[in-house]
Length: 215
Image (cartoon, rainbow, N blue to C red; front, side, top):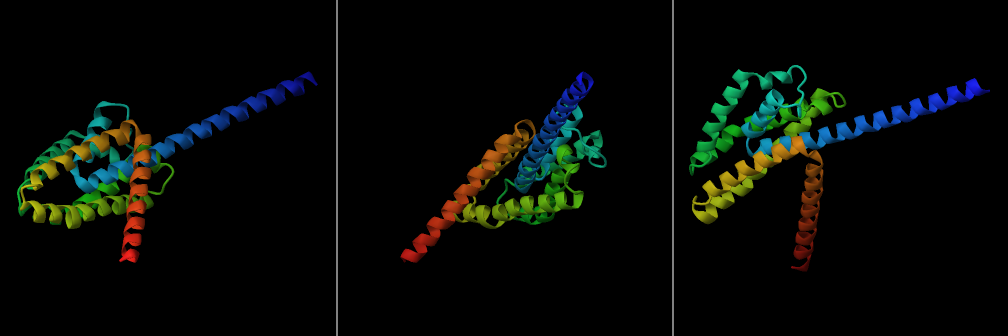
């Protein structure tokens, strides 16, 4: 009886430890999903900023562990290419008329960067199929890019005669940088932002629908 009791207590303890371990894995995976969404959204604003941040953090910190083949992002030559391309886009995006050409070129690059960032998230890749992850990244980054290129920038150009493009572009770069860092360091903040933005969009659409009915 004593032996059976000891065995039962040990088995219960192992089950408890396994439960805690599974919960830890689930929380970590959920954080990876939030990080992936944040990084992909940042890529919709600037393709190279989140890629460079992920590459540098993977190279110099333990915050990100990239699995194959995404670990190539942390190589020196990739980091160098990202720096050069980032500088080119930085200046192109600040020049009126040229910025629209840049957005046209980035139509293919930003969604691709979002797909890579989503799939490269270390915690996500073990739980989500790479193809599904890349599709999700394409949709998130592509959606942000379309909103920027077809709604925000044309409106800024039309209302400010192009003068507002520079401050708006700088604000986008800063936003992409901050969101990328937060996505890696504190991904739960991204979850809160997603909820807030979604709530605002739903509220705005509801208010617009009511206004149209009133007219």
